Image (cartoon, one colour):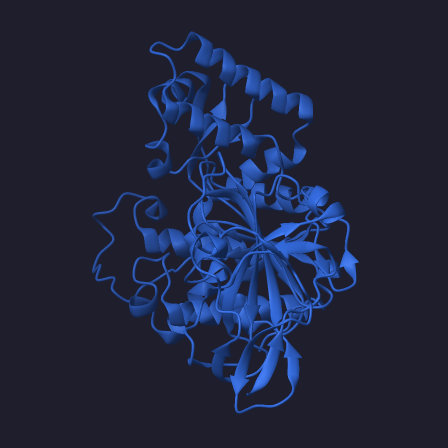
Length: 432
């Protein structure tokens, strides 16, 4: 029959859907590899604690390697999406052929807070668009330090993984973990934006909302649906600081109080040389051009009338990082640096380029940014995830061709480096 793999204890009451398979029946799986997932409905105190998170799911991984055989292959149809039976710890759901004994599956809990109305998106991992998603797993997850990811693709892609559900990180981490991804849409998480949010009082957030509502009331033509969706997502981001927000978790011993992030992974590529500053209220915005195109005419008119462009020098960026690190006491900043050379540069003379060269040549700007980050790291303000050195070691032209989007091999190196950074800090993450 094979070794029985059973549902582990969650530590809270919950119902579940049928299993949606991540690996086919008869597949060879490695130890720690995710094999299936299901939707969850939490009960009691856990349900109240997780209020506002529209989606909860459990991803199950085999603790041992071998050929997979399912006892519970899912009921199919809507029963693989809808919760219809209780979670029963000890229930056998699959087996490893040729092995003996019994072992609990590893479980990773996913929770997501959607940006808009909770529209169903089918039997998928984390379906929909979220303002925040998180994952926690392992015995001791309720006490594990929280790692918040706040960046662009170069900081989020290798942590979320190919299916954007933390599967690779889950498989690579033996110990307990708790990881949160705060989305960069529509507000990109650069240091001044995060600093403003960290220091913003509730009354100031209400002033921001009133200003936008007043602009919409006077808008001609009236705000479009695109304006309303964009404005709602923006106000949601401006009304809360991801560095202060507490995230609860549970393990077999029960539910824990929420914990603020102990580490924050950021992207230096998210630091613009110009952003928007509100003419009256003084807060700052940075919205990526592709995201701004999704806004309607009323939002664009408000941004044009209420904000003024603000230039930033490299010294300004360094100061913003230092101020954020000081204000976010208790949260260690880890910044992904920039690729400074792809190996494809063929400039024979710099004479045709106007100084400062960092304004016109991306690889020069990358070198300047990396030196600035090294100075901050030497002063103890933050840690640096050196993608520049790692990409140069394995081949930047192949693995980081455009300077920001990484190959799968480079992502694997970066995940391992994050795990080592956290393990070196004496926390409950451990590399494979």
